[in-house]
Length: 134
Length: 105
Image 1: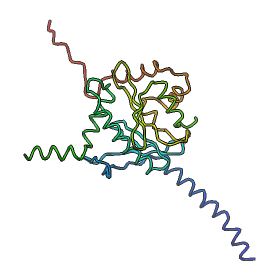
Image 2: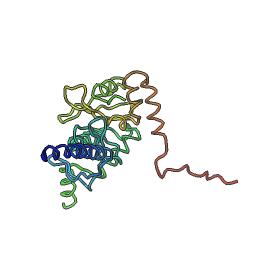
Image 3: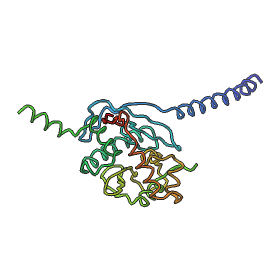
Image 4: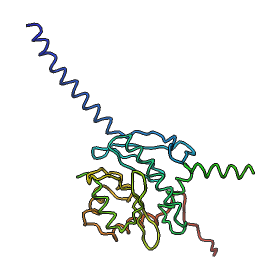
């Protein structure tokens, strides 16, 4: 008898706990998080300075953004979006750098300038360093 | 509002006559040109699922999610989108100001 009433008393608590859990998850998804890119390893790029990244929930997944350069990427998870952002930053860096300067619109030109201020190719940095030494 | 997916991104790339840069990585890069200048790029995720989330497209295209869907689904034309982007391009950067005239009376 005592155990039955104890079980009955637990049900509302279980429901309440579940509700709190759902609300917590909802809240976590409602607010963007800010993190930083500290490395592009194993790619042949390195970070000049830590790159701020905003990750927010969108449409059941996540979008990671480097707002200064307006580079954005999607992913099923926060980590997936973060990894995809790094991939697109590299893709944009390479692609925009190949284009003659006078063929870049204002947006892409700005994007390239920002990307070049926060990241660089490893061998380019090593070559510049060697040239400066010699 | 329905989510923005790879299917929408692919339609948009086609409508904007984007040149697709195939990379060996997780994305192809769609490059949009206008009058010989590269005016926008956006990533299209690799993978066979048309429903792959592409919620990042609106920011890349300087559009709201609603207008991104309009661009994918035909109500918005390439020319209308070009007008939006080139208007943004022509707006002064932070710190850019019109120089005062040097003319003296």
